[in-house]
Image 1: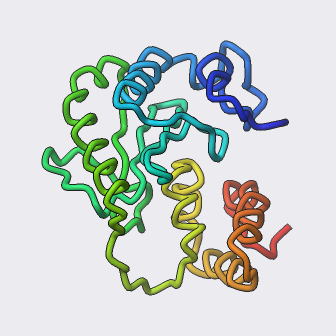
Image 2: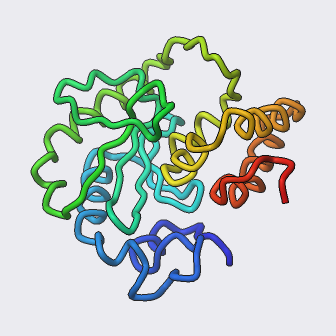
Length: 208
């Protein structure tokens, strides 16, 4: 199944990653009012709307700022480069149990977006200011040397992040080893997309 490339499709049909795409059972249908509210907030701030990893991604000054995702039990607004954020309201949650930096706001009711709108706008403005200034988060020493491309994809794809962090350390290392063998960032991104189904299935890179 082809993943979407037009952001409008996400809000009318879904992401295109599963068989529920363009059906009433798609996860986006349940949360569409909240997803549209988040979209309006981003567009009102002048963010550029595009699609990355089959989800609406919002950019500013050439940098990814935030991305939307919908699941069966919740929908999420994930901030990119979350280490730059001052989470003054304590709203951010980690993508998975091994995430070093909380990066997303999880919603379980569509009305929660309106309740948190002022904070969401403030957090987006923080990251927009950093993008304009060119500031980057400080390097974090990690026990596992994780490629920057994988970090970015996991921050942008909550479902994949949860699955990756649920893997055993050995299975995680199998993917890191395979990615480090690729010298070009584009090649690493291609491998991450190819590995996605295996990661979601809880398998290692060499498992069938």
